[in-house]
Image 1 (tube, rainbow, N blue to C red):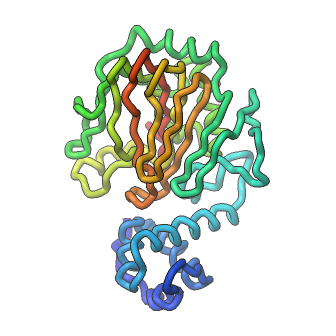
Image 2: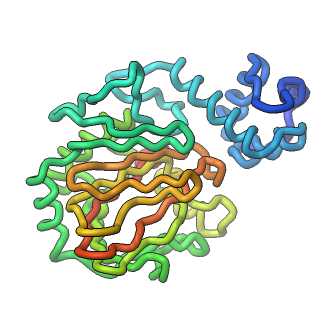
Length: 302
């Protein structure tokens, strides 16, 4: 990564800052895009803007809006966004009720801009949900989390579930679902981790957390070597618990209820809390919960 220094155009950042909401001038847009293309991280960009008088939340909003606008300008090629796109996204131009996922029509149930959250229906068929559970069941073990201190894995008291990972493209079922999700998110299949299946019994939960890897932790460079940052997540619901088990977004007071075949997608182009993608798995109050998780990386995941 190139060393960060506040650019000489920082004065344009100051000049563009209004008293309340950000005015994204051409100068500011050019500065943000050029810094991002030079691999300057979001924390450094936000710090520079804050040094020029921006409030953190407003700087984050301006940064996200600028990058999203830039990505729209770049265009699409064969259904996959251009290589310099910052994060996957489910494109909802024209407010469609349904999306073409290649081999099935998917319903659009809810959409938020910040955090970028889209709730989808009919992503998986009942037969696919059962097949994923059946294939995963013999391989389940206590779920681990990534240990950013070391770059390895560890048992975490915040995550009380059993889980397992499939290899990407391990079977025809996996390949079919992965192609469907890649088409929905406009993100290459090879940039995805293998599908993880998780099983939550009554009382089990996953306390609020971020899916990106903390850049400040010593083990993060080792993790990023396999495909860069995580930039997007699909949570697919394989069954409907009797009570509880939704996916919560505490920063915006949103809870997505677990309904078999549905999914929630969220993206985070920057590894920063201002993306407002803090989320968790609410405790299962009755019954059990089965989900599949698909994490998307910046680059090809190996």
